[in-house]
Length: 261
Picture (cartoon, one colour):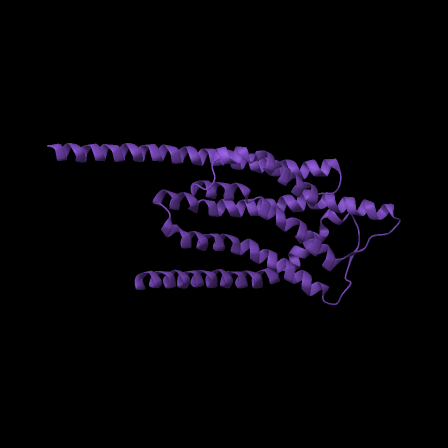
């Protein structure tokens, strides 16, 4: 009982150390992001997303808030692979050697998909939504002026969820390697997944059919890619299980023959 308690304490100690590492990297990235916020803000302001609408400051703290928002975004992007690596190191002792090597490749893939999701949200979804909002405002006979704090808050609230949604293939592959999901189960859940992804796409896109399609279709494609990747992982697992079973039977037969001799 004492050994078990010591093991739990050691795991908690290791978890605390890894959390401290992740937080330390995030703080450093946050500081670096604060210095990079100026050029990034200028780049985002020069993009034609606002369609020439003036961006003004409505509150004395708007500039500081925008700087912090950009710095936090930079911190999240930088700390993501570090956090995933420490999560992998924490759970890897409970995995097989092949699973340990296989799941390590998830870290760069998850980082790439997160950045791809952010870029998709910024360059595809956000311009469509801003165009719709500008047209709606113009139809009311009102000249739009965007507060810089509200503009960037709205941008980040639209962009960051796509970085999370684009993690779907990685999550499915990881759960397949842990034998929680499999292609058959994903096929059975396809209609429900399509419905949920359609609801998410319609919610995040402007209320017109073209925007709904442009946002929903990539999400459905991600689900199909996830199913395809799950099928590949599952086939490899079945092949390894068959090899292990043949090896086990051969060893059992050898022991039996030696016992009879």
